[in-house]
Image (cartoon, rainbow, N blue to C red; front, side, top):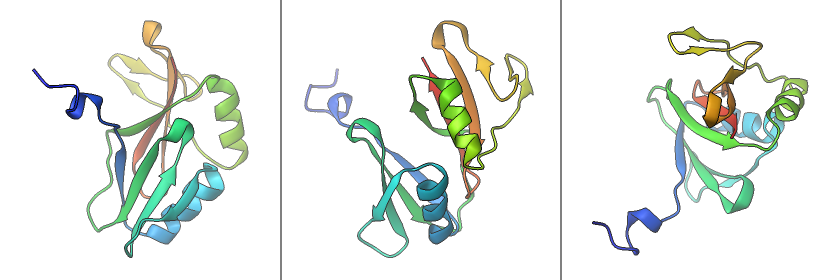
Length: 130
């Protein structure tokens, strides 16, 4: 069993690959409205999201994360999607076994409602209302 000073109680963050850090910075600042700061080394950026959370973007030639790489938990999915669409964000539509979106949204029952978009670097990001 892990102790309370272990990984189980540590803050959790996301690391996203970017082929072009400048393009990624523009996307996250302009479209998503997230504060981006330099990450302390060339090609590294820090994003500041809600409730003190943050994420790292690093420039690499590695492939983007096609599976869901991260999720934003929001209070009002419809309002959030409308705002992001006004900024030019396109939400993905899926028709998969067990997951079908309608106008970009999937109803996940007790888990809430969710939508996905792809960032400027090809990473798949989820927006969910639980």
